[in-house]
Length: 144
Image 1 (cartoon, rainbow, N blue to C red):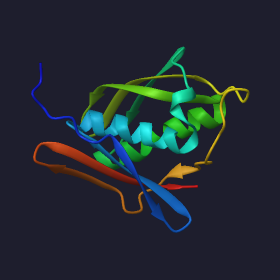
Image 2 (cartoon, one colour):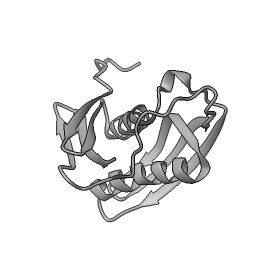
Image 3 (tube, one colour):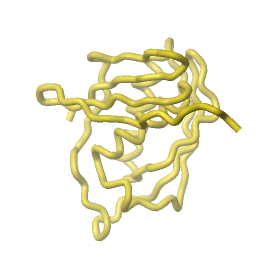
């Protein structure tokens, strides 16, 4: 059992015509998962989403910052193409340049889901991955 104190999951930041998320985690995996949760919280009320399907995602990138942007953009792509909204993220492997995750959610059902914000892409603008006292903080701005 871990003695780690739970940290905040995420918060929103506003930036001109874009919006962003600052996500937190006890480790880098949790920070990446919370960034994904923040992304989908922009799009929909996650309380209306059930976990009746999953998708596995594997990514490689040249560095961890590129991996974070690629991860979020892959989730946006899956939402745009397959109309799947995710609410739970299990990151099984996360290195400096590779990510493997299983994402849980469901297909969008407009009779139950009210879409809030259209998110086009995660950007590199003001992108940050920081470690402080063993906890992680990631910041990403989304083009909306």
